[in-house]
Image (tube, rainbow, N blue to C red):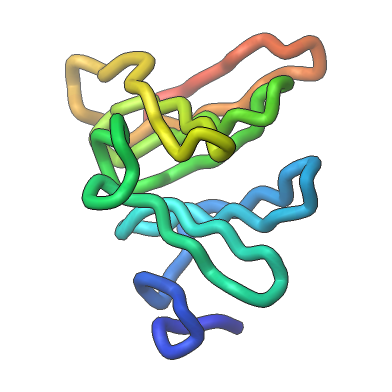
Length: 113
């Protein structure tokens, strides 16, 4: 297990993904964390241009390697790890947490809690 003393921003994880590049991506309520096996790197609103919300509830990888991020405020974001830049795709009108995933054919799916 990893904690704040190991480099995590918080002690709990809301979602987990191993990308095709081999990195572990951990959704937390204080941003998205990339773990390369040695170091943690946190992406949050204070250090990642375009990222609009820190409270990540789901992470999925798009076919092009960008990451789809669902948040507990209903904000769906797309993070480009290579550029370290994010874009908001949409915000639900009811501010409910969303989950996001891609199907085998690349179709984007989302659901509200």
